[in-house]
Amino acid sequence: MTGQEPPSKPHGDDGQNPPDTGMGMTAVSYLLGGMLVWGGIGWLVDHYAGTKGIFAGIGAVVGIAGGVYLIVRRLGA
Amino acid sequence: MIGQSTVLAAEFPPSVEDFYLPSILPWGAHDSYWFTKITLLIWVSVAVIIIFFLVSYRKPQLVPTKKQWLAESLYGFVRNNIAVEMIGPRGVAFAPYLTTLFCFILLNNFFSIVPLIQISPNSHIAFPALLAVISYVMFIYVGVRHHGGLFKYLKAALIPPAPWFILPLLIPIEFFSNFMVRPFSLAVRLFANMFAGHMLLLVFTLGGFAMVSANVWFTPFSIVSWIMTIALTFLEFLVIVLQAYVFTVLTASYVQGALADEH
Image 1 (cartoon, helix red, strand yellow):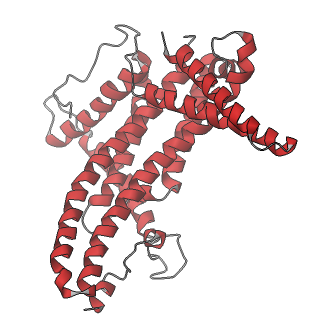
Image 2 (spheres, rainbow over the protein chains, first blue to last red):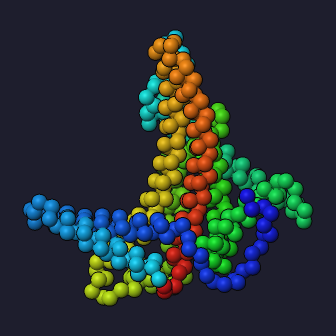
Image 3 (tube, each protein chain N blue to C red):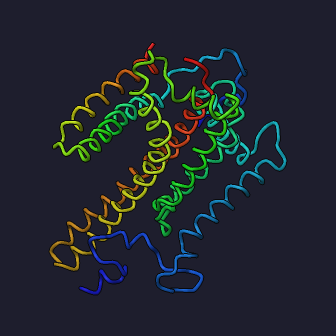
């Protein structure tokens, strides 16, 4: 594919990493992770407290908020 | 006419059973999966990759031969466009592993569209899972070594720059997305793509036979179905290359994350 390209790029010209495709996956996994982890904890609380799902709902919302916050802090400027 | 579909020894709605091919070493033995076509393909791919790179690099020349050019551009592609691009200058150290990973996945995926082979070992979750475990252990090891100790690495990986009172909320999310989702999604993404691709080809191929044997007047539809199979084979080629690339890029990105200092 890039056979024409000279095989050695200058090492260490600058230590900058360009924006990468891994970022999208990280963002998605933070969002889903936040919802699943805190929603799951909320579900457990529901299970033991005998409530009908209020804590799972609160947990999912809180988890999403945490995920968004993490995306902003880790991936944002 | 009914006998036609049994020529393939597979009934129409293809099932997971179609991924478990008959045993080779105890020839034709049932329920023995120690040496099947899948096993054979894995060893063939390992042998092909080793022999190809050894042969093409045995007498390296300034003006490369065709084989040498292919090997060099494979390695150069992974090194420049994946390793250095994602990890930075330190990525050169990971280029050999990433190249091996890329070639292995690419070749094994490619088996799914080679005529007469047409199944990829990666359509069994065990192989993507093992590859994911290798990448997982590697990026954790790299992170531990880079940060000088397991706890220092965990501190860098799990504790985001945030006020202390939000940390209890964030650390579980970080743990979940960094150490639980990553290997799982690596393995499942590759496996599911290969599994679905094989299943799709099976549906259209066997569906054609099923329609012919159900009624002769359905023959035109069968032919359309087989043409679809050929078209989907080309689509599969895209998926094959893309998935090999994605697996390698994500591994590189995890290594980059493990090597990253404070953001």
